[in-house]
Amino acid sequence: MLTALFHPANFMTRLLGREDRPQPAPAGIRRLLAVGVKAGRLRELPMGKGRMVVHCRSGEVWITHDGDPRDVVLRQDQSYIVDRGARMTAFALRGDAGLELQEET
Picture 1 (cartoon, one colour):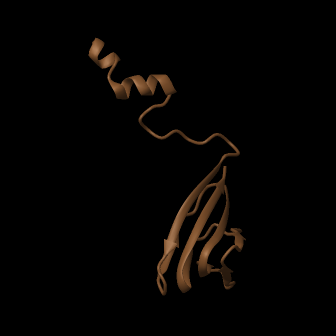
Picture 2 (cartoon, rainbow, N blue to C red):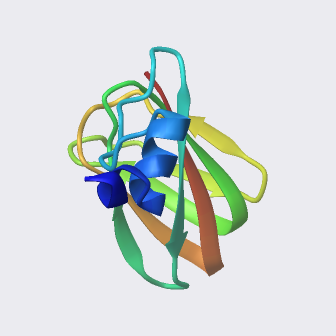
Picture 3 (cartoon, rainbow, N blue to C red):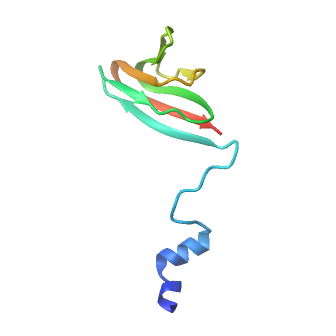
């Protein structure tokens, strides 16, 4: 019993007030996800439940949503506020594209 109480993992969990499983973020907290798209490749981007913004950190990417005739092209340091709930895909136009997905809950 005493061994379990002072086991490093148990001790740190109690000390920091953390559990082993991830906890949901409080309202208004931003979640960031880095996504890479290889040159000339297509990749589906995950959709969040809150307001989503896609930031292009490197390269150039073409973004489209299923059923939406618009094309969104982002170059490095440009952003796109997602205004559709349909599946979103990205295609790296020039070189590898580095994207950062931001979700505000």
